[in-house]
Amino acid sequence: MRKIQFTETVLRDAQQSLIATRMPFEDFEKILNTMDKAGYYSMECWGGATFDSCLRYLAEDPWERLRKIRKAAPNTKLQMLLRGQNLLGYKHYPDDVVRMFVAKSIENGIDIIRIFDALNDIRNLEVAVDETNKRGAHASGTICFTTSPVHTLENYAKYAKQLENLGVQSITIKDMAGIMGPQEAYDLVKAIKESVKLPVVVHTHCTTGLAPVTLLKAVEAGADVIDTATSALSGGTSQFATETMAYTLRQLGYEVDLDDKVLKEVNDFFKPVKAKALETGLLNPVVLATDTDALNYQVPGGMLSNLVAQLTAQNKLDKFEEVLQEVPRVRADMGYPPLVTPMSQMVGVQATQNVLLGKYKNVSKDVRSYLKGEYGKAPGEINADLLKQVLGDEKPIEGRFADGLAPAFEAAKAELGDKAKSDEDVLSYIAFPVQAEAFFEKRDEKERNTFKYTIKEV
Ligand code: CO
Image (cartoon, helix red, strand yellow):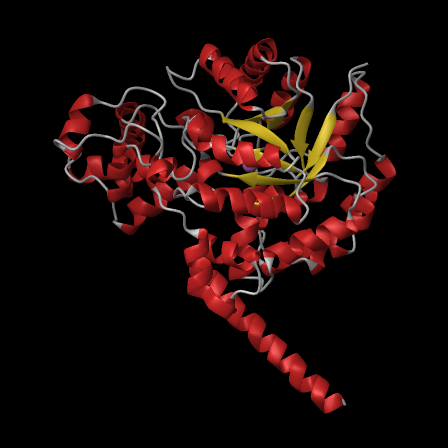
């Protein structure tokens, strides 16, 4: 009987996908102790938008949140998502910042760091993986799933092998758009399993409705861990339900070490959280539904809604079909980047401009940076004419973009002075300067008020 393990995503991806990552710590504080007894492989609780949202909307220190989760759930592996050399954002950071961020994440409680690059350029994972290994934590080498003539099973298997050689302890297949079909999942997991000896984790979203069948076929092909969300916050743009998948896999004869009683307690706890979010409008019922448009267009749901918004703003919604037909052409010209942030936005905006203004009449600064190689290496060949038109005689970057970046941690620390109370503060500032500074001010003010209050009490 093969054992299948579960990563619970309610504290990160599920709430990011359904309620814009607006769950304050108080909303889940009281269930952490219970969740700790569920038997999860790991709890994804940090990284992605949680960090930004803590600072920007919730007036929470993301590092403190992590320490509190660690304390309340000492027996479960805590997991975060990291965009390789981009950390939590969309631009590359110098190596000293990447190393410090990884080291501090682990020091504050993270056990597993899922590390990916939007282009699957392994050079953008190297430093983060190396530091994770040095600190004794688990690096999960993550592959962004997409379809294109260059994203073949052979290439994916080769990439998995490279990740294994880099020293990762597991391979995660990340289907951020929920467009991976069951046969694709089966073939991909099989190919990776034949290429490496590492556990394989599968991450997908319910957006198009494929998730449960895709997860099932992934398990059949040998996947060891799957990502799911407690049922109250599952489905739609979130992950598929933990309880349903546990039930299914057990019925099919797999071993699942989850405690059903605990799972029910967890779900019962989040039911009112969901009800409140529906009531306030934070949770829009639309995101809970199945939307198959992404399957027809092979474009992620988020990108489709962006395109509609862009065209509506310019009163050009009648060009929608034309833009959708332009998307794969632009993507081909750009060497088939996976349609994940920030590539999905770049390709979408370029396709729109090509239709509205004429083919490559206007090329955005971001696309120019991409063509120069500032995001990493394109998966396929970039159209030579496009390169020449945009870069002229300028040569694209040969090496790793971060090699040309000067160390930045000490400079940021000096710049902040006593506004930063710790190295963690400096990292918050480097990642989100405006939000972090505003948060520091609020925090200082709160401290001053507490101080005044204490004096009065005495
Ligand atoms: Co996701």
